[in-house]
Image (cartoon, rainbow, N blue to C red; front, side, top):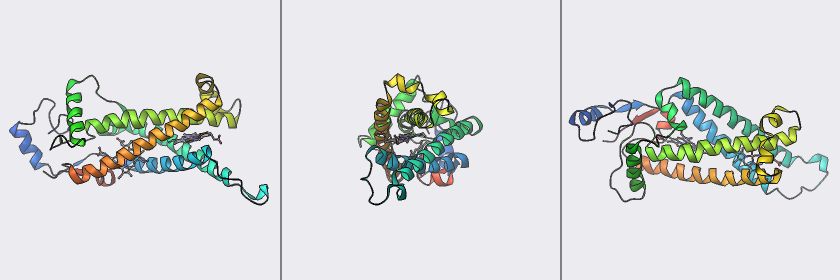
Amino acid sequence: MSTSSPSAPAAVTVNDERVVALAQSIKSVYVFEAPVRIWHWINALAITVLAITGYFIGSPLPTQPGEASANYLMGYIRFAHFAAGYLLAVGILGRLYWAAMGNHHARELFWVPIFQRAYWAEMWGMVKWYAFVSARPGRYVGHNPLARFAMFFGFFLLTLFMIVTGFALYGEGSQMGSWQERMFGWVIPLFGQSQDVHTWHHVGMWGLICFVIIHVYAAIREDIMGRSSVVSTMISGHRTFKD
Ligand code: HEM
Ligand code: HEM
């Protein structure tokens, strides 16, 4: 059993017979509480809407035929982008609240134990497993160490970047003195000028899309090849073990 398991004492080793016996007796562990699961799927929906609408903001559709006043297509696309942007930002605030109130798995998204040697050893083990080099992965109750790394750097920090740059751009539309401009207006001169923020906000989207592709691949791959349930765990909250 991994040292990141909540049910195992900190200093156990994989060969400890008592731990193996304990692990064999555990069929299911409640890992992701309802707020984490609900947030996960709302967040996935928001990011999907943001990526599709963001793409069309960056590469707009051709001008529509007919009276200009009868067409509001780009307006609707931008509205959907901003609505999903607010949902994403409020969702992250709610998720941070739950990191404080929820179980210890609710905090895994927000930090990585980079100063622990054992963490890097376990992560290397997972790299080898994903690269088809090792035949058997570790067994984890919460996120595996590699997933944790990807979720913190590839999702959480990047999403914060998208929120900060997104609201800085939004502040330009809502104008001087608006709360968006007062809170995030400093971002635009930091990058240079508005177009630079557009460009980095756009690049960030492709970074997040890479994260999502790898994340969904890894989740489904682990479900099939790994030692425990994965996708159903983000639906029911329970991790079940195959061995
Ligand atoms: C835009 C799309 C998505 C994003 C941004 C995303 C992001 C995340 C994040 C940040 C976590 C960590 C949750 C936490 O600790 O609070 C997570 C976990 C998870 N996600 Fe997603 N997700 C997306 C789509 C999906 C899809 C489509 C699936 C199903 C195939 C999925 C399956 C999972 C699973 C199973 C976990 C838990 C992993 C584990 O057991 O360690 N996700 N996701
Ligand atoms: C996953 C998160 C997000 C993604 C993938 C995303 C994607 C994009 C993309 C690709 C663009 C076009 C950039 C360009 O080439 O000019 C854009 C523009 C923009 N985004 Fe986002 N965005 C995200 C989050 C946000 C958030 C949280 C806000 C805040 C409300 C926001 C507000 C804006 C604004 C104001 C624009 C400029 C609209 C315009 O110039 O008409 N975005 N976004």
